Amino acid sequence: MLKIPIKTQNITSLRQSDIQKIRQDFPILNTTVHGKPLVYFDNANTPQKPQVVIDSVNDIYTKYYSSVHRGVHCLSEKSTRLFEISRDKVQNFISAKHREEIIFVRGTTEAINLVAQSFARPQLKPDDEILMTTMEHHANIIPWQMVCGQTGAKLKVVPINDNGEIIFEEFIKLLNPRTKLLAVVHVSNSLGTINPIEKMIEAAHQQNIPVLIDGAQAVVHQKVDVRKSDCDFYAFSGHKLYGPSGIGVLYGKKALLEAMPPYQGGGNMISQVTFEKTIYNTLPYKFEAGTPHIAGVIGLGAAIDYIDNIGLDKISRYEKYLLDYATQSMQEFSDIRIIGSAQKKASILSFIFEHIHAHDVGTILDQEGIAIRTGHHCTMPLMARFNVPATARASFAFYNTIEEIDVFLQGLKKIKEVFHV
Ligand code: PLP
View 1 (cartoon, rainbow, N blue to C red):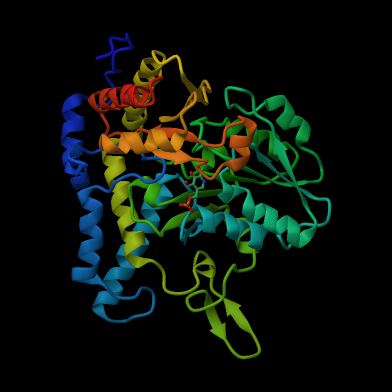
View 2 (cartoon, rainbow, N blue to C red):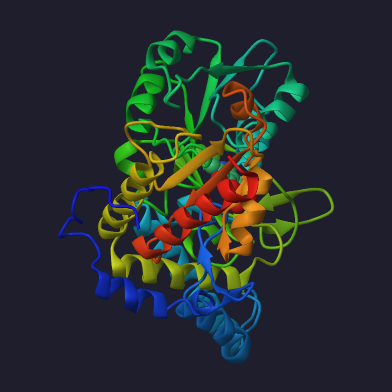
């Protein structure tokens, strides 16, 4: 195999024996694909689920299932208690001040749409501005385009350099009295760039501009502290955090959430209804209309316990070790260009093979049992910035190994053989 010197693994990171134990927690990792052991490098898309999460969802349906907040019977009380304990877990996980600042939604996408419609829309006027960056996911572009269409406000975009980093001076220049919100991704899903959100929030707040952070990729790789960063809104998805899909979180500062109108109307979000008038429920329920994703919320709580138990510090050091190894090893391929080489990066590696389309790369790797993502990764404007239609993306989780990266590198060699390049 490739003999490329890399820094030895940090002793405070996860050890080989830890990883072998961790891998046993994820039943799907024992699967074979096309007769080969599965190498799952599509983690930025959605990672696999540990048995404790699968068990917690199974337990709900087999032991405790009932609707929450409305029943007086034993099962409803039990599921309500577990549901609300999950809210406490999320609160601690992101260090929010108040539990009612945690709103359960379907995912990052719904969280951002909620802020666009409930927070931004009522106050935006023609020629106001929403500021974002070139590396936003479509989930953090389109809700703002829609609200701009509804109000006459304009989108402004912070440029990035060739490494995939925000050009900070340009960002500062774009802040002005018309800027009504900064919406920025914490970790880019396509480039892996970790943005300097604390510095950005500080600069925006100096001009009283509120900030929404799209944390879909960040919460999995590093400790997020919403009080320390002082962001106004923070959005993330349960499925990217090893939890179930269809559940996510919007964090918002209490005073802002209290002043906002509800996003959707229905059951659970009311305290009193007549045909003439409705009095809305208090936070967080004002934003949780209808029967929630009960199993999703409780499964998310189990995922947070699992991650906390391993420790995000250890996870991020180990993932950095995997990223460094893969990045350095890929230098051997003169016809591969890595897209995104920011100084601060999470374990996301986008690349293109000269003369070979990303989809062909993905298809050949799939034959080797290796799952990566190919395409525009819901970041079409970013692809345009790098002048590429698509990239291949390998993204590593803490259950991946150096040996799997070696299998992936062999797969890349195979692609060259198939295409005679
Ligand atoms: N933002 C980023 C950076 C993402 O990577 C994703 C999903 O890939 C999203 C937003 C949307 O997340 P979801 O589809 O879970 O709502």
